[in-house]
Image 1: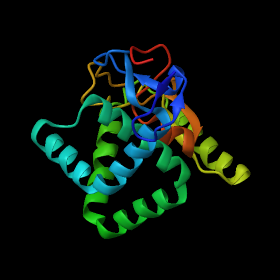
Image 2: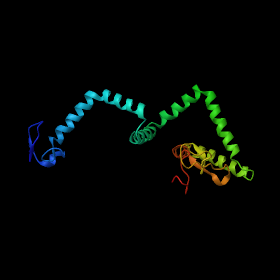
Image 3: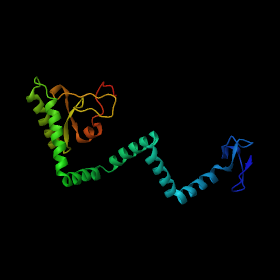
Image 4: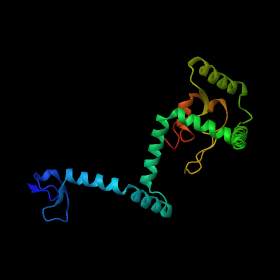
Length: 191
């Protein structure tokens, strides 16, 4: 048993956090008082804490923990706000038609460079027909996806570029294709 120095209540030892520097090995405040105190502190100093973290990140770059948190938060936010994301993309494309055309041209050029002479163009066209047909039947957009991406992720240690041929194509729903991006393929080094 121990008395909390904050609320003055006698409580069991399990009601206190461990604190190695004290004689009894327990923190002076009980868990309830500590949580209330922390909550009050963060509420009163949230802007100062945010400013300090941002200044540290600006000087040293974000920590791995911060990167993982932001990535997870962004994925979850995009999932919850799928319509807003589509609207943002449309707005950006309308505001930047030149950059949109440049991105489309770059993609077309990559596809042309990745198309081997022996590729069966009729079978490739069948994949695009199937994607359009599935989009009309199901009401959900479908894309033709490259199983092994045409352009691998630039900052990855596994930069592999696939070919634009019928054996490297699959039809995916728009959601699945956007989720996959250019980061994965079956039995590849990034799985």
